[in-house]
Length: 239
Image 1 (cartoon, helix red, strand yellow):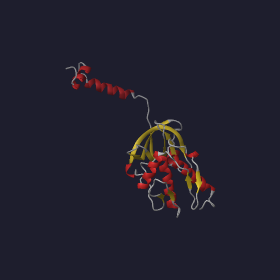
Image 2 (cartoon, helix red, strand yellow):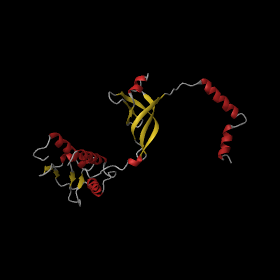
Image 3 (cartoon, one colour):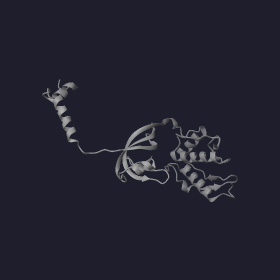
Image 4 (tube, helix red, strand yellow):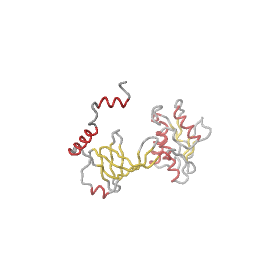
């Protein structure tokens, strides 16, 4: 495609990606107010000179030196990953970033391999999680959305038969779930979670069990005249 013949959707998506990439986390500059020009050749945007954006300049240098994105601003990571995916799926599509201070362009193409280097940090675990059920169901892929105690939402995949056979109304109630998921040992995040079971719990007290525990405790401590002094002695206190 060229500036003389570009689809409006492609133009809008590319312009938005460029804006997100330039702005990053939004603390250095307001990309919406940067002047750009459409230049001759393949579809491209050229910005007016940017005098101060140290994080942007640093990220561009990182992208020039290698293809691991871990040290790059998260929003810029997402743009590069989208471009890398598009380049691999669309023949001949190449993204190129040129800047006066770069020794060579940053090129995203079918031959590049821009990625985050977190693949070794994910392990499969079984976990118990507790949270409020915000959504339960789904037409094609049944799932549950759980609001965790830290405010984040976890999507948990399940199956239609499991939800159909569940007799309790769990929507907007706190529940305990046993899940199987991928756990990131660096960020402690969870992904690709699958529901194994709802874990039922009750606050009712089993009076007979409580009495048995009290009886066993009384028997074990019957020869101890002063429980506090005995504990202090074990700790080496009172000397």
